[in-house]
Length: 358
Figure 1 (cartoon, rainbow, N blue to C red):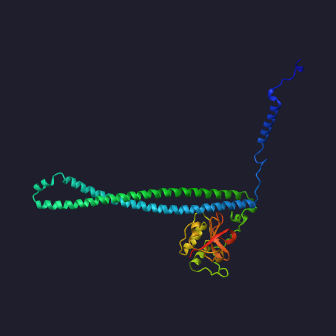
Figure 2: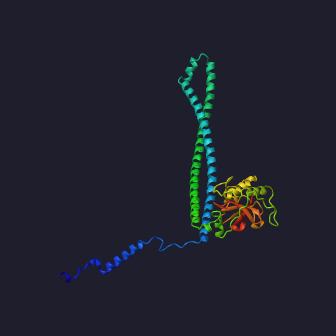
Figure 3: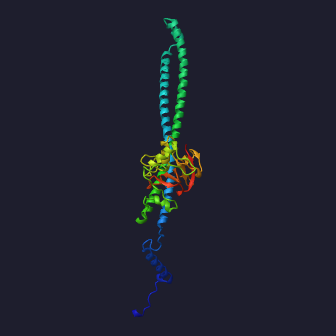
């Protein structure tokens, strides 16, 4: 009898349900496939990796120049704040001294003012002495009025200096926050560049940990030179060789060859791009501002065809890189982290302008 019974119909196993179960099982099976097998991202070529590394270095350099500018403003704000605080301390001392003098006079006046002057005249053994003292009291009263006015003025100045100092302190805090933001940006870009470089096979790793990446991005790599290499004997045809202060700046740059790029550094053990040019011209007795975007306004603009050794040459639309022209179409510059101070062609980067500091 049992063998002739019809199997029970289960609603959960209807056609629609069976389809849903099948899809769910298929989805579960798909979920067990290791990530990346079915939809692996396309592998980038070494040239693409180097180009991305170069972009990271460029972004880090832009952030570095902003960091340098913020640090320069921070240093100025701190110096002004220190001066204001010293000024406030000196004025407070004068205010306290004036208050003490006024208080002493007020105490003496209170002690002597309990007896009417007509009575003091009657009790005085010498009316002449009393009148002399009364005349002195009038003069002392005039001095009291002067002291009161001086106290009020000192108090006003102290309050003004303190208000200015508070504003400068807020400005200093804003610049410190900007420093921290730019520092984080720099470190993140450099870390991303290092991570990308590690993905390259050893055979195509840049010899200088990234300087060759510029070539991969369409820019020629800079050429280092020995630190004792002499400056070029002559400038390109039609141009005068470096003389005077320009020659001193060029000589300094040659002496810096091989030193490491250190962002935010102005020497002597390492440099960033604008730190190197600032130090070179400082050695020649010329003070340049700290950043690329301020250095480009620190002298006479010159065209590319009129470059002479010692000129500052700037690159990229944001004027975020600078080198020191040495003649023959070449410059000395601090490229980026991992690439030491070196010689490179001026046409290895997009030219933005040039300045002659002296």
